[in-house]
Length: 86
Image (cartoon, rainbow, N blue to C red; front, side):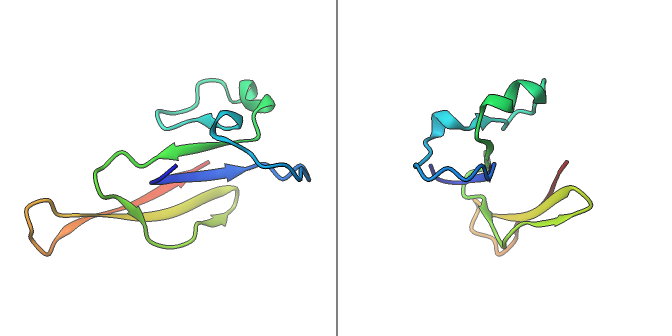
């Protein structure tokens, strides 16, 4: 799984997880309680070439991470994004 951000619940399991163990929340979460059976979630970065720039930071229950998408036209500029997930 490439170009994704993951959140994994630490339940002390020692077996590997797969994508089916995680909830895809790329387009949002409608009912978070329905995710209790899942071992975590992931968000796919949808923009072509978008990459996370640094490790996520958690403050007051919100996780923040930054990404950068290079310009498709060969310019030196691209698009920087800051995500905040509650």
